[in-house]
Amino acid sequence: MELGSRIAVLGRGGADATPAAKRLAEITGRPIIRIDKHFWPVDRRPQPAAHWAKVQQQLDTSQRWVLDADLGPFDADEPRLGHPEEVWVLDFSPLTCLIRALQYPEERRDLRVWLFRWRREYLNDELDRLTALAPKVRLRRFTSPAELAATFAELERAQKPAAEPA
Image (cartoon, rainbow, N blue to C red; front, side, top):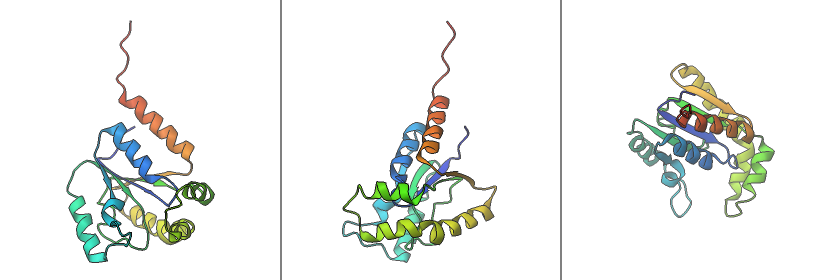
């Protein structure tokens, strides 16, 4: 399986985009950029839009990476995803995501509200934007954790050198 050099992994709350991005970074040996680390400071208040755009531009300097991101009301239009070559969308069912999100009681209440609004209010707009950029950006949409796991297994198989014949 051929991958782009810059891959953004998107998902609503509870889709576990962070563990997915970490796993992809491990398999491919690429650095991971955790957007939330830069966006949500210790006091858990979002950064102002102008500051956030500068932070995103600074993160966009490497040629190979895996970006752990989401789409929501605080994202600036550009460079929202760091100009990826490939975008992985974890578009799991709201019920799957809610069950996972409930495992994190420290999360703010608005996360659970956003979880249900994500596809309609944020994802569809972003997919339209990405589709307009095609074929520059390859889009991979995963509708279940099993589908994502199968892709990781395929990538791991491709990374292993072929065994030499005896």
